[in-house]
Image 1 (tube, rainbow, N blue to C red):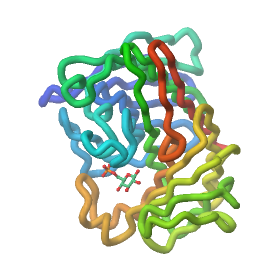
Image 2 (tube, rainbow, N blue to C red):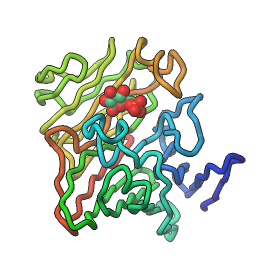
Image 3 (cartoon, rainbow, N blue to C red):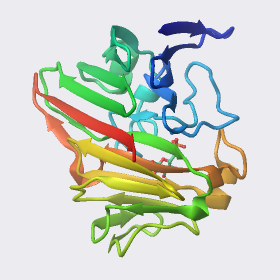
Length: 277
Ligand code: BG6
């Protein structure tokens, strides 16, 4: 079952319910901000804006066509997260799985920011696992270079209780002191954390007390791990001062050295699946 909702300010989202899961997806940014199956997977800020042109704080923002400040002429994390997508396909033929595809194409406003013709298709599969596939097609006569990420905010019972496995011995860029390092052991948190892991080639496991979430990706060899901790959280928009305790971001990406250059008509798909073990 799919319901369409429109807030009084015009902000639109859809609600999906099948026999095993429920989800909410905003048309702005093709932004999934709720997914509940075995767990309530995605963190959503209690003070997030739901307003055109303002990015939702939580869920899975799409960073596209640029991750971070990689392209200084674009806003941080690009423009897709505040652009209006259209629904192009919904498949509800199975009672335990719903598939929805949303599309963004170049238009006057995107061309003013980034002068390339493109097609961007996000397919979200809502089942007892959650899967996202983000396909970029170069429709321009010129090649373009892309960095991107699924900026996933995971709900956690407490940031101090969390451990992330699967990145042991991987090289990473620490954005806080701008040094290149090697990960020793699992990742735990006791201060601000903002690192881009490279050469990622296996599943990542988010361990939160007795719950383990498996993150499996395709088309990506970089993953960003982020928590703003106390100081940065207090300075950030759209979240309460102590919100850092409630989430961790593990962002399946094509970031830094893992950028993609697409020739005319070439496409690339970034995929992720979240499974509660
Ligand atoms: C992360 C970055 O991906 O996103 C952080 O590594 C950044 O440096 C965070 O603070 C949030 O970004 P924004 O633009 O949503 O506030």
